[in-house]
Image 1 (tube, one colour):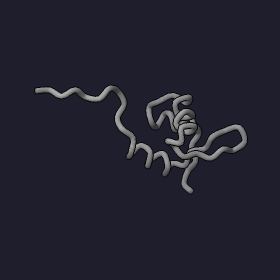
Image 2 (tube, rainbow, N blue to C red; image 1 turned 30 degrees about the horizontal axis):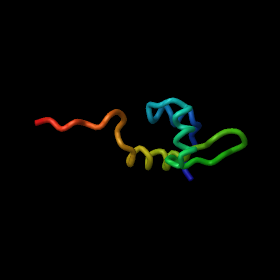
Image 3 (cartoon, rainbow, N blue to C red; image 1 turned 45 degrees about the horizontal axis):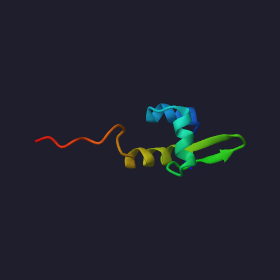
Length: 64
């Protein structure tokens, strides 16, 4: 297990809010460990998520 990050720190890394990180955890999209009342995200798991997530926004439309 590598460095552990809080949901706030993970959100900063991903460019999203702390609440969005919690939602990703609850959706089983991002691995995390519950420590008391806090979530801890392994830095390696965050990097894995970043490598596999799709970019945000609407899908591109085809141009001719």
